[in-house]
Length: 240
Image 1 (cartoon, rainbow, N blue to C red):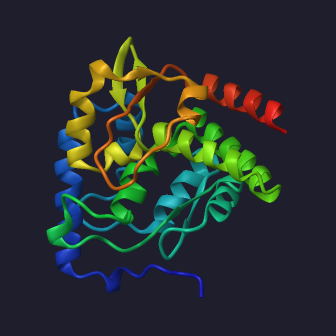
Image 2: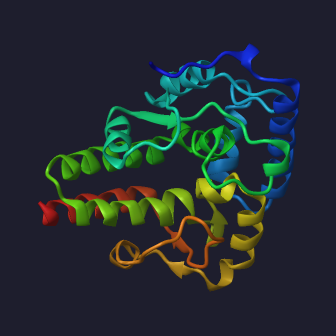
């Protein structure tokens, strides 16, 4: 069955938890997050609501009008091949479950707050939306051809940019990745590490393993999203 979302399925405690997460994180990101992220979060304020859990259909409708992207509800983590396929169709996936009150500081598996507050706003930006679409197309092609090593390289790129990347704005490193945007602890740690973070290098990033269950120790600062898309295309051309 295709997962669905019903507002009546959420308790008031879940709405309160969402509101707490939203307000705490938005305040914590001021002065640290990239303007790209903060601007797109503000653009989505009517659908990515703060006082109650947002409806996926409303956010999807706004994205569709802005950049052609949509949102697909999934039951939880999905295989890389399915994830790539959704991205190639300009669909980002989200769960609809919200962490408990006692999990506000840490959860092992991403919940709806991570998926939507962290990942969805930047898809309102044309450059980022274009990069993610191409990323999905390339991932799908490599998955379909059984290129397991190259898929791992793409997963590393996703991790160090889409989840835990910085971008440079007006000469300064600013937080960007969804894993940082949606986590109070990661925001603090990443921001304190900004002066020791590395300049983004695609070959190095694709060669660097990562761990999913610890606070990150490696961060990279990207100068240009369109330039990264061009580099990714060149890498793909050499790979095939």
